[in-house]
Length: 456
Image (cartoon, rainbow, N blue to C red):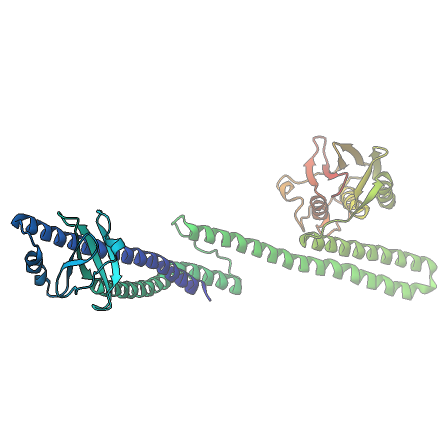
């Protein structure tokens, strides 16, 4: 059942409850009013009979009773009962049997009695009131069939009105909901058209400053994120294809040269070394892409027992010393001793490997790349600084964005897919830490990664 139908049913149900409560209240109040009107009629009739009897000072009220009661055309009953409950005077319609029991006739207070009279049929309302003299009781009554008929008509009218009200409420709910949802449906259709056609425009935001405008703003933000994700996916596929194609082609060439140069041991060794470098580059790139995919999917980093940090850092620097020495760059390490962490050492090694790779790539000949590790307030602070050109000022805010590249120093191989710092930030944030980049006042770039010592 759609929203429109559900709201129409809800409208009808609410109106049904309200109308039912109102109808019950109306019929109860209407019935009470009729009853009070009938009681007032009986009391007025009794008072008139008593008043006329008093005014004429009749010793025997029989003639007076008949004179007043016969005018009711048989629709009223009148009896005068003695102190013992016996019938003294009665109208022909009332008969000779007492209309009320001795218990109902006893006492001096007025009372209304509802009885069924088989001789007259149906229910009757009787008023028992005191006669002015000789402890007699005057009984006068009228039938309740007119009241029952009026109540039946009132219930029928109330039921008919309730059915009409419920039907009108359902129709009104259906119409009003359709009118209210029409802008939402139009907004949905526009959003579907944008997604299906990959258009670059946004949804129009109404100037009403209401829930519909808020929905349009939210959908625009969602579409913007979808476009960004789609663009990053396309960029990732394009860059990965380019980056994988280049080392694969070079690897194929190196292996082909190795096969041809199998007779020359030196040429073979050189070709295999180059093939090994290409293979390492492919491994590094696939590892970076896998890490980004895991962080995008929210895969939490692994944690384990406390591990010493110094061997991990030293191992990474050992892997880069030969490359740094070839570029006349000196790696300097300053590590606080005895530091342990539960952060996944593979991720820590990946962070440092990317930072050192960038620093060595951009460090000028004869310069230093400084790596320092210290702890403060249960945090592990890893800092890598070089003496290169630093980040271009316009590029610094996007330094950690994916596929962001800077021009390499003159004469130094560029390399890299622009994923290094993006990997660093993704790992840091996944571990609950941060990554920042600045330009040093003395020249060069500095990247600082802060990680919790205990990975939760």
